Image (tube, rainbow, N blue to C red; front, side, top):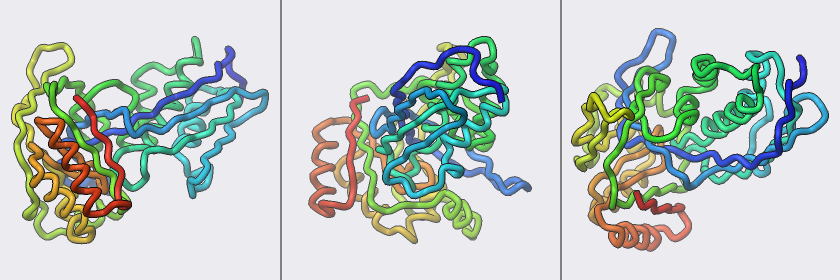
Length: 301
């Protein structure tokens, strides 16, 4: 491969996480993938940090302290290699990753990291950068959540998650509490468990209907998301195997949350509160139930 046509700068990249306020699996495709409808919302914490340094040698040296996986299986490395194949070059890089987004939490940490690398590579590629459509196609090949992290802001997703429509959410004055418990849920397992359910609808979990309004990014053609239900198809499969996640959800409801839902395939739980003090009280209650079992993040939205 040729080297990059211009110098890349040393950079510190912040990879945000996401939550799914709504996630409905609508079916399974013949190829084994699943169609879904989902409302993605980005959150600035927790976030991974990628320290990228150009070096005078070929390839990517990936440093992920504490992360137990091979370089070749890491989505950052895969993003680098796919970009190099598509663009015909890539700079020599050392990338050191500070992993703050917990794995197995349904927050899209690996996908966000991959999108960060793609953005960095494409921005520095000059005249050889990939067009938006080509970059999105490359992102889809890495994972269903990766295209979302190439854009900024909430989005309604269809297909396997690659069909995105930017939206605006009217959540001003509310507090969103993200709970990351110690449990880890593998996405592949969650899909398999959902496939085996006799009844695919939600079974007995608590969902409230906070009044979320969403419109297209242009402000025209309102998107039909008024009174979005906090819903996740995976809960029916995940909660029976991970009962503490249901307990966390029920605790948040009892503390006055307007809506509570598991994010992605789990195990994180997000809750929307109309009052900040209720979110703080919920954190205290969860800490009393399990002092060392989870991390909590409150976002003022």
